[in-house]
Amino acid sequence: TRPHYQPGELVDYAAQSGDTLPALAARFNTTVAEIRAANPFIPEDATTMPPGMPMKIPIYYLPLWAPPFPILPDHAFVNGPTAIGFSAAAFVASQPGWLKDYREYASGEWRSGAGIVDYVSTNFSLDPRLLLAILEYQSGALSDPVQPETSYALGYRDRNHQGVYLQLVWAANTLNNGYYGWRTGRLAAFDLLDGSQFSPDPWEGAATVGIQYFFSRIVSGNEFRLAVGPTGLARLYRDLFGDPWQDAFTLIPGSLRQPELPLPFQVGQVWTYTGGPHTGWGTGEPLSSIDFAPPAQTSGCFAADAQSYVIALGDGMIVRSETGIVVLDLDGDGNERTGWVIFYLHVGTEGRAPLGLQVKQGDPIGWPSCEGGHATGTHIHIARKYNGEWIPADGVLPFTLDGWIARNGAEPYLGALVKGGLIVTACDCSDAPSRIRR
Image (cartoon, rainbow, N blue to C red; front, side):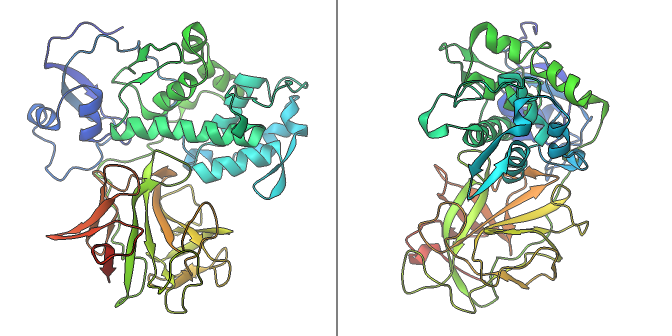
């Protein structure tokens, strides 16, 4: 456990991948101004901190901070560069557990156990090895040939989440809620099932807190302490996949900047800003996505007119094209797990850019629709990922389109786009304050 610090005492901290000043201030119970005063070398326009950079942070002690134990590095949490080359199908087939013979009808088709893991891993952008480790820890999916007689393989007892697929969807969503909550500073403590409060050690990384948060939803007491301690998931993961700490890969580099991006429609058009920052996939964190709807005389689901197509936000390659979804890779290596990626949701099937297509900024990639996921009206949902990590739409790396900067609202889907003194307010009502011209 940590010592009892004096108020404002300066403690040593080495910046970790993805750290930002607002998040550090939340974790150490201090302010950005105080961190800046103690580290005057940090430039005014700093975005992400360079990993390994030594800092002094004024700490304001909280009595319930948990003992430190890093479970996984961040690069082993997201579906990023270090996941390249891993085959869930080959790994599951090599294990004696029940998952290799499991099949379930999930999201419109029959899928194998490994297929379900891959599908959830891709959608939520989580490393498939993390999902496999959790399946093994909770249900012996890789080691026990006999499947447990329960519809709740991961221990989340909810009638709306029966079967491996929906249990994994819930798990992935919960993991992301914890990871990005810590990453942004919006989650600094949470309650366990027994009603006690858990405050992660402020030195922990986002992956560790994501896993702590996941287990906090399904177990408590000694079961919780075991799961998040040295003999819990961390040891199981190492036994299955080797020591992830041996790889020093930096997931989010220091001073990251978003490339210049335009609004997602043609010059001269007026669209509606229908959704401020909200989840990229699932519910809750990360608030990485924003929504636009094309001009229309009607509400609800309609076919967008021929000129109301969605454009490529940059030069690159289409690396995923499926029902409702187009993923544009901006770094040219053809891999969704690396570099900057634009995720488009609710792209109609007709005219949707095919897999492997090379595009230039401004090229059509498809038309907005209601396809893919939940939609009450024709629109396009766009989000950014970097090295597989969802980038929050508001923060030190705000979603910036033609100089319009996304700002969070009081709750998801609210908020605004701001450019100088101009403000466009998110509303699915298509009123004048929500219209934006490119």
